Length: 254
Image 1: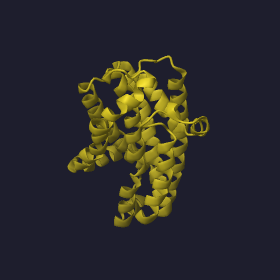
Image 2: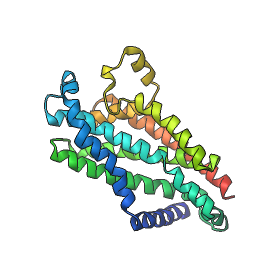
Image 3: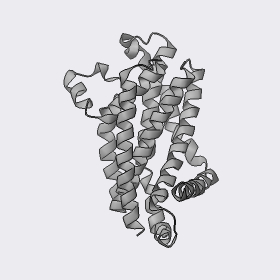
Image 4: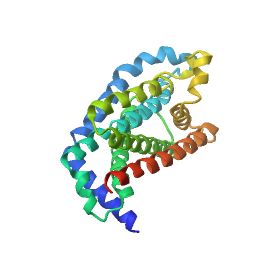
């Protein structure tokens, strides 16, 4: 019970800090909205071979990838804020508090998940206005998958930030990770267009499974095995990431 209470207290504080400066919420959705408005219409001719003959079908392919992109990048770059807290002595002062070290991490990461889901809801609502159609139950399950992705990438970002303790080092590390993840996950353009060797390499990218699972949910295929495979893969990786990052937090505030 103490751990849950500590996590809730940290989450409340982090949400309060976020709401005091809500510009970050809008900054976070600006680029995805631009992709939705300016890039998605260009894809329709390319997606016709995949059966996307209407706006609804086109957005069912494009929007899930866009949301996964938001979850990945929204989480991977959260470590910059933690480095600022390290420099300001916030983490140092945490040493004298009885708050659980895991709660210090989880409260921050859950803040990132809430922020991501708020952005995902806004983008989905905009896509509905452009013709996207998706079942509510499938959409909620897709949001669960997005939440796992955001929790995992956020935890990894915090863990790496505690290791490097410098924005100059964190930026190239995160970009080095993000670029191949983006290219090998079929986020903006399905891997159906890729050569076979690239498809084989993408099979080792867990985010490729996440994109496929999210697209299956948006298409209404709840019984598709890719849905449950992606949830399982993301669930395991998220658990490992949180455990590792929590240990880094414990060492930093010991």
